[in-house]
Amino acid sequence: MASTEDKVVAKQENATTWKDSFYNPRTGEFMGRTASSWALILLFYLVFYAFLAGMFALTMWVMLMTLDDNVPKYQDRVPYPGLAIQPNSLDIIYNKSEPLKYAPYVQKLESFLLSYNDTEQEKNEECTRGEYFLQDDAEDMEKKACRFKRGFLSLCSGLSDTNFGYSEGKPCILLKLNRIIGLKPRGDPYITCAVKKDEPIQMQYFPREGSIDKMYFPYYGKKAHETYVQPLVAVKLLLTKEDYNKELAIECKVEGSDLRNNDERDKFLGRVTFRIKVEA
Image (cartoon, rainbow, N blue to C red):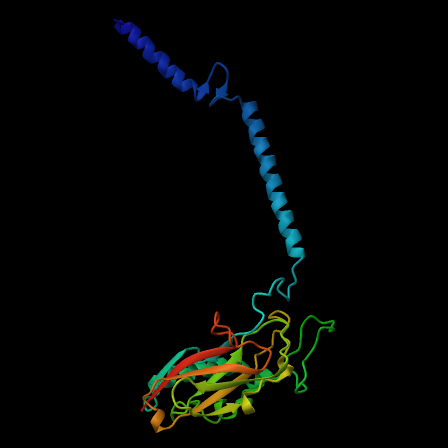
């Protein structure tokens, strides 16, 4: 059996071995390596990671050099525009005799049309109707835009009727095509709406016949086309007493051009369906 002295010596040797694994005073090693060895390893990793960072920066620089500030490199996934409405809601329900009920819709329309005020649109150009406003050869990268004044929307402009028809139970809905750079629709596009399933209702379109003029195409991008605004079509729903307190599903489509409006995989491509209920 080991003596007490042998046990003490063994414990001291174990403690010395454990301490030497961190720092050995005899060889000057720290965690098994000398200072020069650690310096070489740190230098290697410094050079290695600096090389990787340089390669990454070079790759990013080369990629950015291939991009255009004004036109996306790839946009083939969105060849046709969607159709959107204002007020920005697919369910419009209100009581025409309660202003607080329809006030949010009126406020949204008024806010949306601020960029269509005459003071803003006077900065844009008076363009030739029925012709594309092509500026591909322009030396200046900043493109000009055609005027679309809110007055073009007549009874739905919010100028003669600040409530956009909501107080009388004949609300206005604004429709617009989403922006796609370089889009030039063939034909004469226009927007038409119809009630689904229920009896048809009378509607008024502004501009006349819901037309979208070619002069608002093509669009050159947000950076190049800073003052551009999308052309709008306003639909005034001429509801009668028989139409009140009924939920009406209305579908609007872009017609008269090569723009698609019947893709079952995307129900907002060239069309939009919304529900409206006017309580009385």
